[in-house]
Picture 1 (cartoon, rainbow, N blue to C red):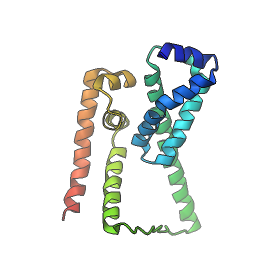
Picture 2 (picture 1 turned 135 degrees about the horizontal axis):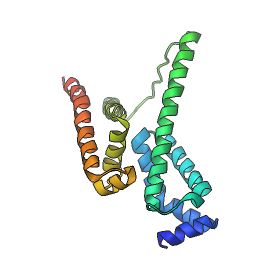
Picture 3 (picture 1 turned 120 degrees about the horizontal axis):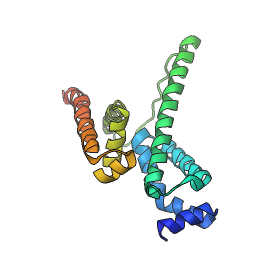
Length: 191
């Protein structure tokens, strides 16, 4: 089914078309959200929200961009909102804990595979996610779309409504910033 037909069927409330949309784009939406927020359960929740938003607002879709681009934009917006909400909740939780005199609890999970290797991999992933989260918003979006979603510069430019050269510049700065943030981590890690 071509995109124009799918959009028309979605606008008419066709449930089969909606199922087809979800089946076609669910992995892309979850992966994009995962690249932004680094948590599988939250990424799946965001995907659900994205498809509910599409279901309720498909009549507003004007076909000025592709359906895929529209889904990316909604996913990025939802992911950024989730990040902001999480930061806000974490801040208020820390303030509340401070006033209640709670100490930070350590949650230790037993790992029977190879505890040292598991901790090392988790530490590496946390360092990368922390560095990625510290990037300016546009750099993070461009980098995530390039590396996690493997979109071309042209696709990222269309999605972010920027020129191709602006995307190239964002990606260059993102890589440079990540390198600066991670070089100290890896120097300390190898000591």
